Length: 399
Image 1 (cartoon, rainbow, N blue to C red):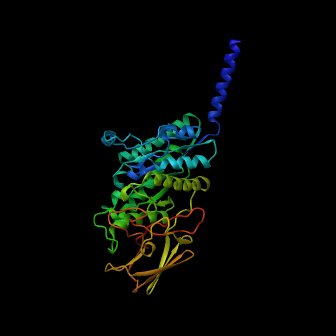
Image 2: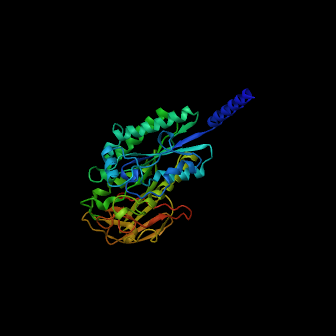
Image 3: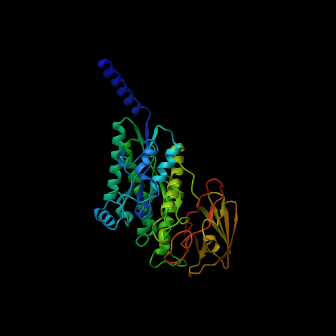
């Protein structure tokens, strides 16, 4: 009888091992950037203690663990936050709602690996390849891959979510930031593919910063408007570069004290939007989400801007901005726009004087020192879709 029991137990063990290895796929979609990527200051909404258990162990963190939370990699900051009564690893993060959305839409044999990487208050030059945060991020992907391989599971990184740019508004030209972010995407693809051996590109789901008005010298009618260059770079990469896909601009959301950091509910919204983009990538290899301008034509005092999809005005979810967020700035620093009209995927801007040589803008406005949907740099243009409307990306030039 004892031998029979041992035999049955061995069969059950073999069956369990076989089931663990049968058809499991780990989809890894982490978040990377500075404080917004880490969820800094956002009140915790997700029950992170039971997040993995809630989805039958299908949601996993770095190294395929089940511990979620704050990801600051600087020991001094960790100690300081504990000292002032913050619990370490306890902020809301877009990675959680992203993972929950993916888990709800993908099969039971698909596991979701997500975590946040980067460093708060850090310029892009200290987040790209060669930096400590970048290497830690890559190491976490490698560790997750190794753990999946040990269990006989497939492992794939279809995309990562980029949330960074605030620290660079004071320092870099549009071309320099764009060049560095493009190189980050190239290096990330090379390093991840060397780990996972996947052929498909790792897409960069790119958000867009909107914190222009917290910059010291911000002036929305300045012809050069240096502060808008980072948002412009992000829009151009999403529009023109095949490695980048649109996440969402963040001006339609709530910021804590209308300053730098998204609140917890807004982090959740960003995560759900990024998850929908990631699902498109997983299913088709790409995503057509995002609303942005394609081209503009000037005819005397009229300017016609063509967008990539039909548009509409929304002054309910975002406070009404002057001319719904559009402006036409002359070289003398004067906004010459008087009114606008929308038709399908076209916006026509009517000006008080000829617009040749002027700067065409959207979302470059707002109250100095304020950020977000009520008083910050913003616009009221979104896609005409009734099921999944997308807010227009900020732009300061149409080249």
